[in-house]
Length: 232
Image 1 (cartoon, rainbow, N blue to C red):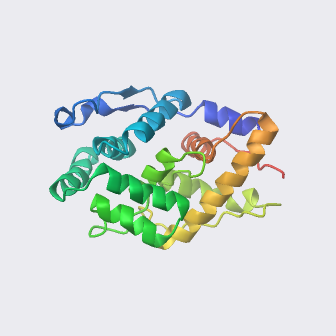
Image 2: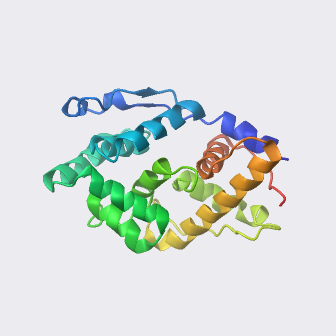
């Protein structure tokens, strides 16, 4: 039964070349990595972020560009807006890392808004995907990412996937991008990923993290794969 999940995770592919950020030269020691995009290279990037972020603000810039990389028309300018806001306001790595850690301990809208404020996103839109990428990469055992690929998969599969489950998925209400009105659906997604990671760890004898569940879902949505509902 878990074979479909293992297959999807093994097919995960999100290659990113951080070196193409047009301001990479401003941040020595950063934006130097070509990420192949499989699970192992993505975990290596997560580890790099977790080690560097408490003391280096450029580590956060890398994650923003990584998250936006597939949006080729906007990734440079959207990253620039966040970079400029942080640099112009003198925001320190320890402050942003503290906000990320606070959210990991207590997933509330207020703590989400704090991250978003540091990124300069509050005045544009109450978005979820970019600010919630930071805690997911910082603590992948506990938190999955969320994006429109995930939301589309959930909306197509939540009824079937919820059968015999105590932690239940709920449909996202997004149009275009995920915003704050979907925060409760995000919380349900988090709890479901945690429980699913526990089931997969037992049933496959391999360690699954919340982020691994999300990576399998992301791959299934992009590649039209079926993920068999798991039994408790």
